[in-house]
Image (cartoon, rainbow, N blue to C red; front, side, top):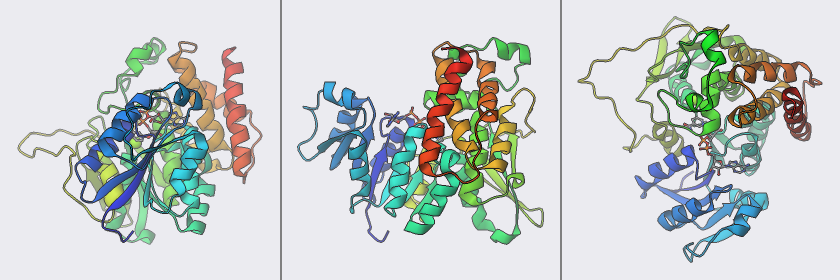
Length: 387
Ligand code: NAD
Ligand code: MG
């Protein structure tokens, strides 16, 4: 990336990460420029973003929403494309330096995969890409000369702190977790959790799916798997600690016992900006510490009995193969069912475990096989909950 202005495509620009990415770009217009934006159904928001950033292309991936939307407000220099073909076309354009993968769920894999195949720099927020297909994605990135830079705050922290020592001296990685809104709930209280309570995260403002994942701690399970493939770690090198303040974003421990951490107030604009400007650092809009304040930060071990998702994360990180795609799809379907009032909060993780245990495991699946299992796991969840 030798150009002085980096040209960016944001997949999922209307979501929480997408909007934060646009705030970073708006603050650094001399260094960052948006040339493509995609959204699924939020077409009006996409038009508004196009008016502000004048990209070359906007893509609406949901063809029906695209047909019903009013595109008359699009700037004259912006071309409208529709569907997954439009998304693939924009990602593969020669003018694109960086693709920000900010679509939620397994729907994010297609664009991320295409970016990798085209040798782009992939700023990866969509952790589901690596959960589903980590070994395939990492191998394809090596083959095609693509660089994958983490946006997930914990993985950005690990990526940054790994620079403090030699890889062969790395002992372990410690991912921090806020513990979510139900950190101190008893088993009995967890039975009563409502959708509204689950959507109320104590430290981060995020899209609904990842907010529920944080409440079940499935988010941390997915992040264990993400870290395994992204950094090529052994599963038992990845630990999780609870840190309710979300100021320490993760830590790495070296052979000599030295531990290095990355800290900042919880604000996704910082890891997003780091991925967009790497290896440089720039002034930016992210919130800063006020060092004249008193701070009190806690760290303690997670309760794996009340939050059984964590164990699933380690199991899938150890097993690999088809298990990540199955866990991911089962979780997406179970979260959707919970948000629709069809299952209770404490049923989400057992439903995922049940589907995982019933699938036909393959240690080295093709991408095609993973997509088939994604669909299968969703059907299994529907059967599990009786719909
Ligand atoms: P969100 O729900 O706020 O936004 C999702 C975006 O994806 C929207 O632009 C939407 O239009 C698009 N989208 C949804 N379904 C789609 C589909 N089927 N096809 C194409 N596009 C589709 O989600 P978010 O919170 O911004 O999270 C995005 C990704 O980033 C997730 O994978 C999440 O795990 C990850 N992440 C988010 C945060 C955060 O702070 N929000 C932090 C770390 C990682
Ligand atoms: Mg995270």
